[in-house]
Length: 292
Image (tube, rainbow, N blue to C red; front, side, top):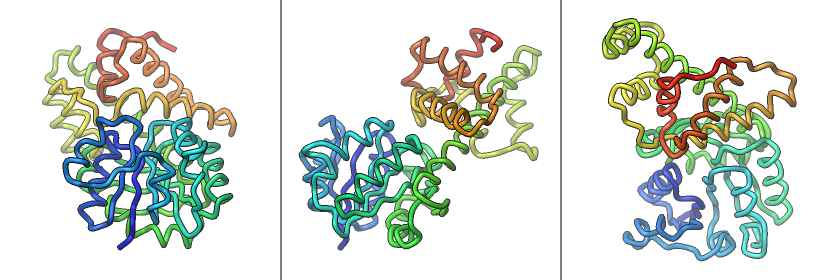
């Protein structure tokens, strides 16, 4: 039985680790904060005291952390993943980080004998809980093939995107599109509302039109219910928008809409909304937003 080590048990990581467990993999988990380990301890799922200890006893490691610094932190140092001998092992980064961090992580892993897969996910809390994530895989073809059964225990599709870093490039582009869709929905909803029409009528019209997409249905319902429980925390999308901005500068791509959206998320952070779902961008718009 293959041994899976899972690092990072937040909203996404805990659901993904559960999927691995339910698929029959021998699971061991690690998280910096002890509180998130309790649901796994309660089910007698082994935990590791350090990333190094987890790596020593795992064939595959899946990392789902919040940002580039957190990824490199669990890999480096005297008790990091890369302080173990990784010969024959695979490290899969499912976190959304920078291209540079993904490539640096690959170098660190390969220097100690391991293989690395850049595999951020498309999907948030519900797709993670239901095994419907889409993995955007960057790495050697043989590594992608080797990891595919494990990834499909957590998701519905694995899309090969190219080399290490290309999965991250694809994920950032998709998050730019997603942020624009949610922003446009919120703005359109307020336009309808302030014009005297009903919110529900607007959503019904969208659902019966060619405009409909699952993200619009999910966030539209959150807008109607004023349900801002975090499925995709706002502070994480703000982090992604900053990564997207940096990538656009590097490649000389103008992002007028993306930059305006990033300003709105900066305002949301200033208003203390970072821990809420990205649907809370509606609250910023309701208060009024400066024209960039």
